[in-house]
Amino acid sequence: MASDSWAIGVDLGGQSAKLALVDGDGRVLLRERVPVDAGWSAGQMVEALAGAIAGLVQEAAERSIRPTGVGVVMPGYMDATRSRLLFAANLPKLGGTDFLAELRAAIGLPVSFDADSNAAALGEYRFGAGRGARRLIVAVVGTGVGGGVIVDGRILRIREHIAGSLGHVIVDPRGPRCACGARGCLEVFASGRALERLAAQAVAKHPDSPMARRAAEPGRPTALEVGQALAEGDEAAAEAVRVCGWWLGVGVASWSVIYLPDRVVIGGGIASLGPAYLEAVRAGLAEVGQPKTVAGITVEPAALGQEAGVIGAAAMVLPS
Image (cartoon, rainbow, N blue to C red; front, side):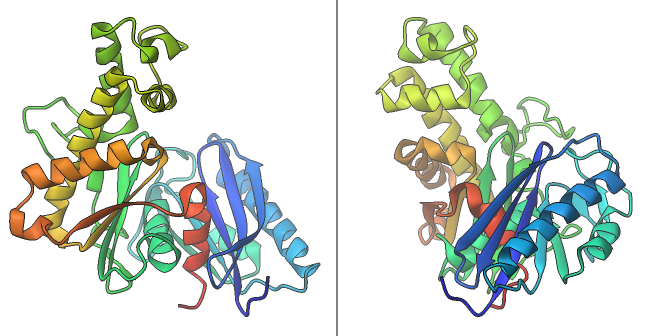
């Protein structure tokens, strides 16, 4: 694999950090995963990450490759200059510390920090399903609903360093209270947790359905079990997926009048539900959205899968 430019991407989560050596075309040559503990201090986290990065740099050197920089992404909020981590729900010990500065000092290469949602958007724009889009939204749907916005090749930054909290657009003011404190957020209706709630309601109505039989915990199918039942043609699972996807389409309709995207890319674990889920998203968008606005929007599945974070992190420091 020949390339003139290489970078290391680091995707830091609450239980592990994924690392990858990525070339200028978005291809991954080396991968590494190291366990982390959300209870670690900033010093402990820096030591673990710096050691893993040093190991990857050494492996690259054995192949005569020298990375030119490191991109590090994580969930949470940084200040406007992305030089201080203000809050990270999955990494509570790091918020408000000098973690970013300490990590930069320990690495010995140029480092760029950003939110994982921004990295996913940049990765899809540069190397995945967002290529060629002028105004792109990448929605990352997992336990919650996050995402990033790209406008004319640049990450849009409105609140601190992100384009607002896409999952906390209010879609039903009389809906349930969200964990964020607001009422009726999109995340309440369209996240992985929402899908599991819908699935539990479905198996209560259809206790003999394949989804009900698959559930390891009676009456509480996981998102993975919903997907397995959906693949078997289970109508109870299909209904849960239709409702969950429809609500995400409502969210896309709400985003569309703000950001005017020409393409929306859906990633995260829930996107693995496949065509039925994407069709439900498109149906919600068409039913609810402003007709002239949504007519030009395409909704596509993400292309980078589980490597969106590390590829996007590397893209932050790779030449465009």
